[in-house]
Amino acid sequence: MASTAAFAVSSPAASAVAARSKVHGGGKNAGRIGCRVGITRKNFGRVMMALAVDVSRFEGVPMAPPDPILGVSEAFKADKSDLKLNLGVGAYRTEELQPYVLNVVKKAENLMLEKGEYKEYLPIEGLAAFNKATAELLLGADNPVIKQGLVATLQSLSGTGSLRLAAAFIQRYFPEAKVLISSPTWGNHKNIFNDARVPWSEYRYYDPKTVGLDFEGMIADIEAAPEGSFVLLHGCAHNPTGIDPTPEQWEKIADVIQEKKHMPFFDVAYQGFASGSLDEDAFSVRLFVKRGMEVFVAQSYSKNLGLYSERIGAINVVCSAPGVADRVKSQLKRLARPMYSNPPIHGARIVANVVGDPTMFGEWKQEMEQMAGRIKNVRQKLYDSLSVKDKSGKDWSFILRQIGMFSYTGLNKAQSDNMTDKWHVYMTKDGRISLAGLSLAKCDYLADAIIDSFHNVN
Ligand SMILES: Cc1ncc(COP(=O)(O)O)c(C=O)c1O
Image (cartoon, rainbow, N blue to C red; front, side, top):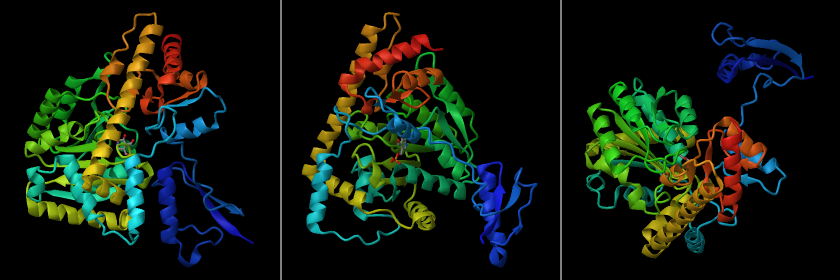
């Protein structure tokens, strides 16, 4: 007969604590009916212990809500309508709305297969050729900080894993510091800092009145933050708004960060994918580095090389002295080892081989330009359709001022719900649509849906 003790807890945090307490208090009593295993009621709210026969020990684990971004794809799959359109997740699609593997990636993979490369473990810091290539792509190959050994680069698990590793580093070495994140920001940023137990607060970024940048608010909030805060900045193609500061505004942001002795922390998930140019999209990061500032930069190859599920990216820390960069790198490795031990090799080899071969590098740049170009065409067509169809005189030109794969439509939650419930257009509830999931052929339909939702739903 299986007899177990089950816990009903009031929150996921309590659940985690309960689970931990259970392990600590387990030992030879674990699994016995009614073992109390060191649970105290007062520390984590309403913890109830249910004694039952044939009840799972996980009875007390509550259902987590669906992820606001990835959950959209699940809902999309369940919709049987022919009209349905998935503009939720930020993944590039062809004009036929099919996923796309870059030709240069296929070519690099074929060459790798021919060479019969091994699959043994990488070192904790990843593939050396990748780390060299990724820092050079980000900063420019002849950047003095690279030549002087000032950059600590560690291959990590795409953009998310790199951000998470940096968050763990902040938590360990800057436990008093908080991170400032833009309002709004990519949904996972808050999860990352919460899970790493790094306190954060928001700085103003989006101005609903202009559907543009609230630059004064942004500067004021960065200025008001405690000295030495980390300021998370989207290197280009801000997600979810698609609104980037101008070069002059970047200068001013750097001024304030420098004055307040804050630490800039760039999230670069779209280099080359926003404008079509790797150099142009690295402008902001290079500007800060040129000023001699120390910076954190998380990089991702999910979008620009279409390597989403290969989980390839890096964390770079530009330091002001070479010995420091070595020490920072050693500590990042120390954090990575118990988290995931070492990163995957396949994507790292693709990046290193593409960047290391002048012909393939050229082909990548061309394909990146084509992808960025398709998104720009769709953006233009959506604007044209809205302007022609909407007779109210509303100015939709903010769509053209946004950049990258997203457009922030300004639709509120109820209006976004209408887009999905009535028009089968799947998008996040903050009004963000991924133009990378849109075709020219669907722009008129989408414009009808937006106009209806905007004017007929409050
Ligand atoms: C702003 C931003 N940062 C980081 C990421 C991380 O992506 P990944 O972990 O797939 O590289 C994304 C992906 O959508 C993003 O938009």
